[in-house]
Length: 190
Ligand SMILES: [Zn+2]
Image (cartoon, rainbow, N blue to C red; front, side):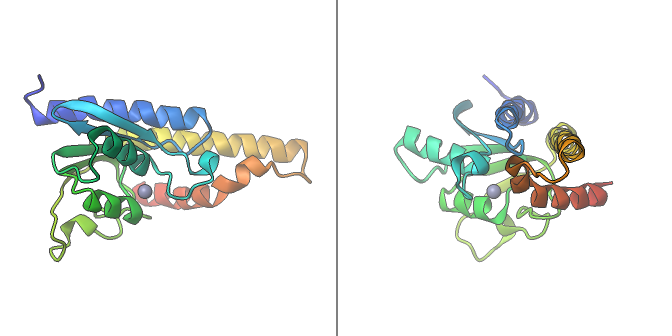
């Protein structure tokens, strides 16, 4: 039984980080999420847009879909969602539709974050559902995993380019744009 919210946040963010690791293992940008209901993880998800050919296959959406199926309900007012990166507008919107009670995220994302990074959809008073948001939980670890992923990608791409300058591995092209954005993100983050 977890009594302390901060302690619980660390435990569940670690599980979201495990999910991010799963994304990394299949070559996706490492972002992971879990949905918690009554102190237990009932659904997990990791980023899979490239592999699934699905622009909506973010970690949060995958976890929300699984949680809704588990509960047999598309609304989850007693659930909390943990994700390693600040949610984008699409995911924030999905969480509001799902009536998620609380969102806890790791790394801040000043490029596409919709929980205060660029905009704050959760603070929108006109929406009839209010979701509590906590950011920066294990933020350093979550950001490091992303940073190392892109550094490794860069190393592999440079090595491939040096070996065969005329060829570009199509596997890399899908992340190049994100990588450039992420370099900027890192610059902002210092
Ligand atoms: Zn998203």
